[in-house]
Image 1 (cartoon, helix red, strand yellow):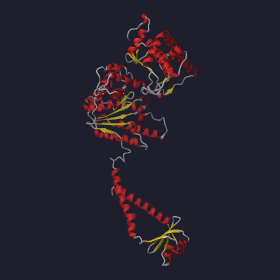
Image 2: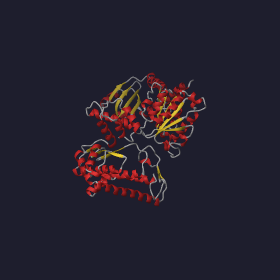
Image 3: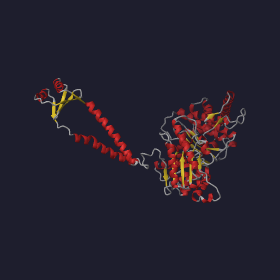
Image 4: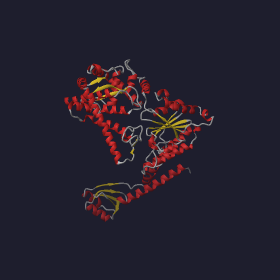
Length: 604
């Protein structure tokens, strides 16, 4: 007898036992046997509302919803009594036991057998019902993976590193001939949206091998042990399809450092991680399986994952530089109708810090704006509007701002622009606006760096703080009071000053030491500082004093610049109140028209 038949028989026995108990319960609980005299007395006392007469029994339904049963006695007065009490009565033929048995047992058992067979077919190893331990991997065969390196713009260095993987998958004997071996695991690290997943798919497309893709979070289940089972199933499938690529996105979901939590969910994650480590140790790269994983939180990964023999090669997929941004823009505008006046280089310069996903969104937003405005092609104006929308938020022209507030905003933004122009040499003023945007921005001043920057000197950081405080300084110079509009400026200025003291070692009192340790490199959020190193109260006080000193001195410098250039400040604010938005060329024209002859600047 096979296991399937045993399961069916066990199910039938359990069903029969349950049915027997139900029948026994119902038969005992519903009907109450009475002598005929008591039954007739209940009729007289109106305790019975309905009577059923059979060949051998009399069954009465009581007003209390109980059933009473008695042996039938030849009594000619019974029918007259029922009619006198106006009790409904009827005659029935006694139930046949064979029919009762057939309806109560045979039919339910037959239905159970049919349902049981259907369930067992559903519960086959390839079915979804029994897939708790099966991997939710998305498997792509060679024909499905159509992404190649031509679809990945920029990222020259990562592509060069991954070309070696492609060579190995196509010609493994080239490496094994002299005793070399490929790394088992390759970890792609970098900020979100830089194209880590796209690069992994491109490797599979270039190699023309099957590609197994899933997220780290898909391993972890409610049931303990299911994650480990899914890891085993994933590698079993991969070995059948070798040579192939396994891609695990968001590796940090299962790869966090072990031993920091006692919760059940953490135990499940640790079991999954342990199984992944065991599987990576258990296969040979000669089998043709390459594991590629991606994460934007490499600092929290377990050290056992990163040791040699597992993920022993890290490839940085960083934010694109100016040249890469141009290449990404050219890639995304292939299917967009672009006007002749669009300068890709200018757009790339306006988008420092944008990743590939941001640029794709920028092109799409520009196309949508062109359609909304009834144009047949995307012009520079749509790209400019899309950049402003992504950086500063959606325009809110219907927000009601009083003339007094509008005047304060105009002087505030003019203060930023003038302080930035005369203090920051490496950036130009691109646009000034007093049109409200997003959730709380009442205006903005946009500066564009001349080139991508990766290092800043101490003076350049001071200049940045001067520019940020220029808005508040302008309010003091013109109105002799300040408003709440400088809240975000103060936060950003304080953050820069704080980093100068605690991270960059730019404090004369503390010297070149790091007080805070940054843990998360690629996520810009409140968790950027994971933990604080121990410092004394005296050191903490010095930090506060140094930050305060930097901010106060920057405020003095910004006020001095705006006091010296007060006519220019008033002229720029007046033009802003008139036009609401000033572009770079108009800003430079205002600068030239309101500066002494000997101080007139050239075009930046």
